[in-house]
Amino acid sequence: MIAVCDAKIASKGPNVGLSFYAFFANKNDHPELLMEAATWWILTHKLDHFEKALKIRALVAE
Image (tube, rainbow, N blue to C red):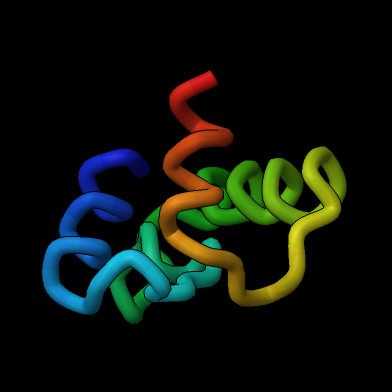
């Protein structure tokens, strides 16, 4: 997740927002992992659909 955040920040700047879908390909190859990410994003951290990549990076790095 940190690598994805870093890549988005490098290409779009420090204010870039992303959703948990940013960590997956367009097709759903890993539904269990997608649900785990959704649970972490929505239920655990109560995040909005789009959040700043810097915020997500900091949460993951904790």
